Image (cartoon, rainbow, N blue to C red; front, side, top):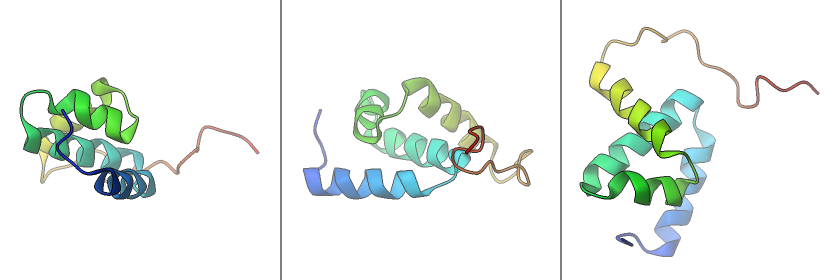
Length: 82
């Protein structure tokens, strides 16, 4: 499945990488949902993420607009020490 041109995939990846962890999951889930069957695997390959992350994002989106983790956004690489 290759529904998006390469330049669109590059823009999607750049946008995805600019988001918080929670928003990356949600964005990936919405993109996969738009594609239907095979969308999770395709978007996982485009965004270089685990399909389980996308399924977690789908659960996050299902809970909107409420968000139990609203004030708990981790910084990118927050678990790493410099």
